[in-house]
Length: 434
Ligand SMILES: NC(=O)c1ccc[n+]([C@@H]2O[C@H](COP(=O)([O-])OP(=O)(O)OC[C@H]3O[C@@H](n4cnc5c(N)ncnc54)[C@H](O)[C@@H]3O)[C@@H](O)[C@H]2O)c1
Image (cartoon, rainbow, N blue to C red; front, side, top):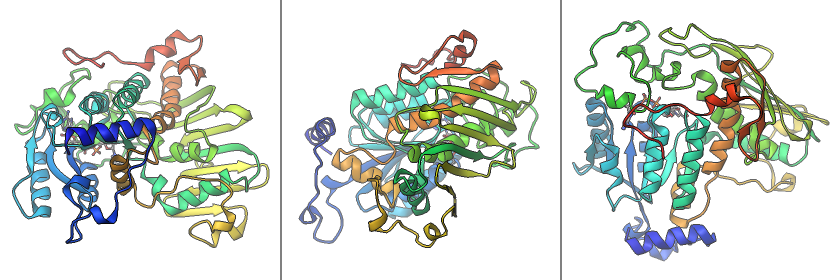
């Protein structure tokens, strides 16, 4: 993409002028002309990166040209997958994401790095003018999230969050019913998330200190976090069970089911005023030290009460809105409601659509189409930020063992300096957020 085209798209984002790609602009062979295609780089090739990249490569208006990872084995697998898809050997492979970001021909990046790296990689991408697919939760702390929001806004790039449930029919239907007033006034929202730890990498028993493997730049993998000994069981995939790197099940899932809860509450730019959360926390020195069972009670405007719980059987996995005249429940592959009629259709019929809800049937296509058109995606960065804040505040309440009062407009903890300390974290030198 030429510099002038990139500037045009950025200006369009500012003035919200959609750019319509006429069919005639497509190549005669049915392929999208290069000028109407996003050139993409993929950073992070672990559990989520391959799926994100394969979905992006499957779009006719996106082309993946570069991959990046700190683990040489993962990097080789990434390049192999992309080259196999395009039947060539053209994909560039980088171990330093800054080199990938410096490439002027790359318009957009998909990011799938561990949570402790989100802020540095995402802010660098935004500052380099790349449109961004970023993963949930937006970042490991609220301060890091604020830095990402600012960088995305300042640089006017188009952001999509990996909160893909927003592009799935049963979630859209549930939200359209709730926002359409079918359950009356919302009184209570229940959000059920997983409990415990899940051994995604099958490395639970590799729990002793060893030297890092030669293929991994472990010092850089730890990055801005506190340096700790290498233990295989808390690096790839299972880093999310250690507070040095991630936020346990609570933060791993908040960007899915609380994201949907907020969507139904029309709360994409708002948040709770009070949060109290109690949980079972392993010893801080445990190999996996994130909370295993938790229950947070949150107060929202208009007297709405939200419960976020993991490991409490009275709160089912998924999202349930309870209103003055009925209720709606939704989860992956599940939908239930107080009115049996609402279960009959997959998509809300047009004559029942009382609220104008952003619809997207394909989360990746929505991102690329919006990036090309300079329009907001279905989960812009501000939404990701507000969807994750309740999870962060629950964690802060647990760690500070206090009830937290939150000013959602100013994004500040009120009158609780001990809790406010957890809004940010020290960065290991020489890493700096900003
Ligand atoms: N949307 C979803 O449904 C979904 C599902 C799973 C994971 N995720 C998110 O995806 C992100 C990645 O999670 P994962 O489970 O794939 O982790 P992972 O550990 O499996 O993979 C992360 C990869 O990033 C690499 N990496 C780490 N730091 C890097 C850096 N500075 N530069 C380049 N590469 C780096 C690692 O070597 C690893 O290959 C997390 O934020 C997670 O929450 C989202």
